[in-house]
Image 1 (tube, helix red, strand yellow):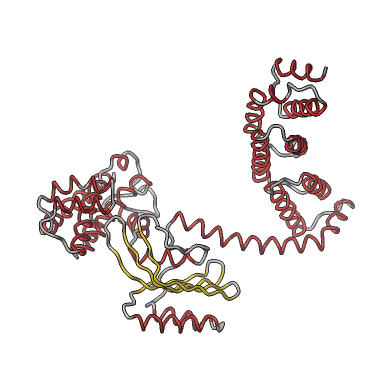
Image 2 (spheres, rainbow, N blue to C red; image 1 turned 120 degrees about the horizontal axis):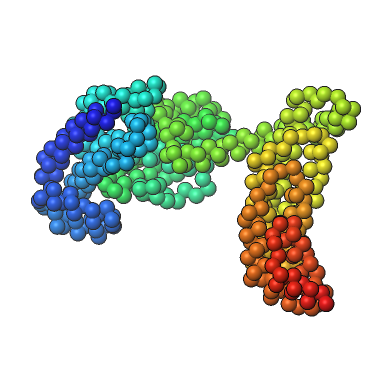
Length: 475
């Protein structure tokens, strides 16, 4: 079992952290344990006023900025030492599960803060004890390995925040220094250069933790050569003249097209380019990768489309002659037609004529449709159109477009989900229909007929009251 060894490792960390806290915090705060308990007021409100009130009440003297930061780090260390014993981490049968890893991450934060404030490294002994906790998964092995696999890579410091900002800035139009999670970023200088697909970002920022108020001025350099090839470095630059000279030298090399020299300069001045796309925070990592992949997909789609446009007639001829289709042409046609259908369904407004033409090509060429993606896009497109009709029920054009699209989708060999559309229609039937259909003019009669026809196609049962209204409107 892993729970006993994990408990022993956490007990060691809690006791050692408590001793360090009592010793160091005792130099700064009156009653360290009372201060720890009242730190909840700061957690609930991390405004400057809340911090001032806390230190006014608990500090032994007027603390210097660096002493306030040390006190906050010690208090955070104690907070995470308590979080280590969160109950959900103990209910499952695998130490590398997300619940158990979460409490080990709290332990990792205790180790990180203890090292930063006191200089004492609690990690070796903690890992020695944690190695006794066996995992059920062979590639994990034990708790120490789980810590190295899942906790260490997730640790964040101010330099990693700066690297995250540097990397993400290459893919964002706005570089206004907006907060990154629990960090504030003040931009002192930022320069970006583009050369074909390559991008270079250089700058200097001040990163401040909104939790511990720790801050650092850092310079960064990041280069993206396309796809996943991205390198970034972060370092201190205390001398303004050195900073200006280095930035000028690197940017001149990049703008001249000498990318190899640019990489060498970045590596030299930033003491090794230790950051990459893997250094991004997980939430942002997917977003940035999606942006990179979007361009890759566009390039691939353009290549496929070029082949299809040149050889599509041959594909249709072979199909007509009942000859086997070359695999490469079949895959190309499937990719292009499925892509065109998806784009047409996602377009606003939907071009029903184009969709009909594409479906005819699908039929002629015997192409297999991507059911899941196209069904989702079709249902979402119809729902979007019905929501607009619900907001403007008198709009006959929207009603006609909805009726045509439903008719078209029902010709698809796809399992389109009409649930949301049916709910919207039923809501309109109860609320909008009685008011719109009470007129006796030709326009109202045409609207009523088409609306009820749409309901029939959606397989929504029309109550007798609605049918009576229809008959009265037609008389």
